[in-house]
Length: 385
Image (cartoon, rainbow, N blue to C red; front, side, top):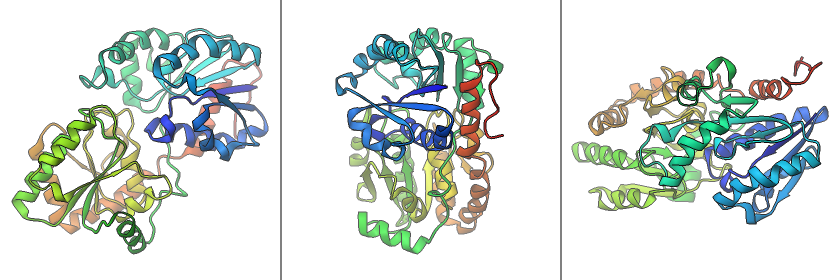
């Protein structure tokens, strides 16, 4: 069997979808002995897949196809010809934004969320129309749909008319070799040296996207917390600028406690676990998530978590986090006060988080993804025994 995975939506490795694609590719490496994988990657993204070279065929895609409209054209017009020429059996597009309409092979797509239906003005008008109208048609053309949570699967059924029982709900995983408890004192020392950060601090790991990621309300809540307590805690925002980032930067500049709000930019994978270990609490008040990896990564590193139940977050974090209403600034401020003022409440979240994080395992998930790939073929095997 020959499988192609299109990776052009990973934005140079700086998004949650990128983490999904890279983790899945690594988890599929053991299967490269029995099937042939083709990883289609834009030229500037090729270094991200060096770990797979020699086990999988890395296929360069010219950078001219990176811009969104051109990339859609490539997926609909250029890619199908390449698939036919190379006799590919399965194409996996790990994002609804680039699902292929027609090809001479089995089509599999991962849908991470249907945020355009839940968050107003998440994208510009053209992208909102694409996400609401075009994607609905493309989803019905897929031979296999992978939903990363039950919540997302239910949305796909509701908005696209694809029944949950015809989908494959496969939760995301995390790399437990990287995201695990460690020497907190050493992590704090590294974070202080790299960013001049000293505990205590609240950490939010997310691209700076407004309004979907809810940074501005979090900044308001932080203001209330600081004004009422005079606490030394800081708010640390880690992530690249994205749509609407200027609103977040403006809110921070206008804050009465601007000096205690820090922007770190994109944080490399190598240092992210230590940032979680050094943080006093992770805060993740997103308005909507199809999954939400950072809270689970933080839990796995022994960091307490405050988050919302929006989208799939309630399903993902279970009872292992302090839950807030993401649209209620006062509720968020109260949660910040509780975890900052009551060490016992903060520390009680740690063992619950560690236990919850164990549910998310890429080895198990890769086996299930392989089963999706081989479904249409007669005489197929059950992967992994």
